[in-house]
Amino acid sequence: MLHRLWLIFAQTATVCLAALFVVMTLKPEWLPVRPAAPQPVAAIPVPATPVALPQPVVTRVESFHDAVGRATPSVVNIFTSKEVRTQRSPLLNDPLFRRFFGEQFGDDVQRTSSLGSGVIVSPAGYILTNHHVVEAADEIEVALADGKKLLAKVVGNDPETDLAVLRVNAEQLPAITFGQSDKLRVGDVVLAIGNPFGVGQTVTSGIVSALGRSGLHINTFENFIQTDAAINPGNSGGALVDSRGNLVGINTAIYSRSGGSMGIGFAIPVSTAKMVLDQIIRSGTVTRGWIGVEVQEITPAVAESFHLGDATGTIIAGVLRGGPADRAGVKPGDLLTAINDVPVSDPQGMLNLVAGLQPGSSANMRVQRQAQTLELTVTVGRRPKPQAQPRE
Image 1: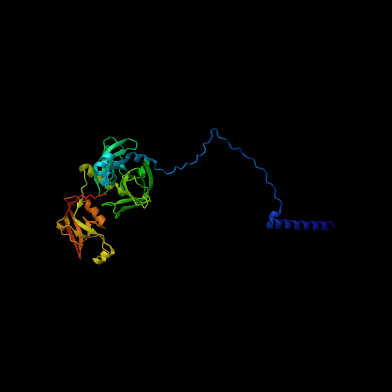
Image 2: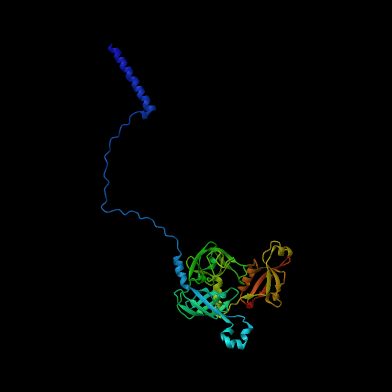
């Protein structure tokens, strides 16, 4: 009997252990979870001196304040006035009418005023501006950035680039720093400073939209910097500066259908302005090279007519009889491809190349005449002054 009970107990224990093993292997989540024994927590030592917490990083917004601060003292406002004669009624010439109604009715002279901007380029009082700002002005007044007003005189002008040089009787003026317009790239940030609409000195920002713009028929010599910095009436003659406040151009013209800025403004490169400035200060005028030819752009129709194919250069459409090019043997119909080994790409490029030559010097012209390539030597003449255009 005892042996039988022991056998039953052993079998029961074996079955229970087997069942527990199966549950632990296949379904451990059925078993009750035993809480872990608490572990002793070590105290964190507190330092004797407080630890400095990291400060939040403050990112400064990009600003051109320093550039503006360097350039604006050199930009001035220009106010001009001139007398304009108007037609009057023949009745005003009647002595009896003037006797009863006064002499003032016979006055046919009116004064008009206009405004623009300028840039101080020398501590001795020289100021660069546009020719059209001071053209035919009887009186020119310059207002400095500090509010001081001075009378100015025209030292010289250059209508073909629309530049003029003024001078005021003052010393130690804040002259602007010249930049390098030939180092500008499309996309560079530029600032336009001037006096638009007479509201006072104003700064606008933009980028260089294009370089070497020509063919706009604004000036004879065109090599404009195009920018989308807002330029409005009154900005003419003001400064176009780079992001460091250096002068890179003189604001001159805008493309507009409304009279205001449409994001297309043009400035004369400082390289051109400096050349004009130096010559006017030295001699009172600007001297340029000239060879006495009339040139024509190579259009598809012209290329087909002259059997030029894909040739580059400019067509000599006319030669002044007895002029430098005529004496050198240049003939109408020649294709001018290079001057002093510098390639000629279009009429404006040819005009700029010749203008930069020293009168009296010799220059080599490479021309293509039919199937021949000729090297001709021309003695450069002096470019005649442009004829003054009558104004209404």
